[in-house]
Structure formats: C-alpha cells, structure tokens
Length: 33
Image: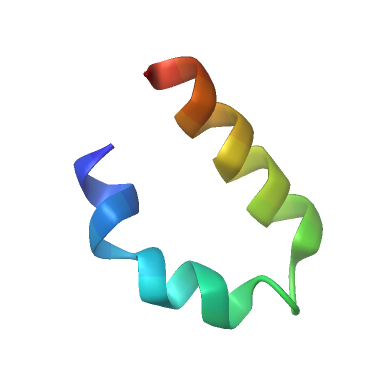
C-alpha cells in the first residue's frame, strides 16, 4: 500500500492511458485494506 501512496500522482496521470490497469490497482488496494 505504501507504493500505491507514493505513485498516486503517477497513477492519476496514467489512468487515461491504461484504465484497465488502473482498475486492477484500485481493486488490489481495496482488498489490501
């Protein structure tokens, strides 16, 4: 989860490029806690 927080800005910037990957990251974050 620490990595997700650090890359938050990058995720938002790349969400438009890889929406499917972004969804997977969100799902993983929700499962993690």
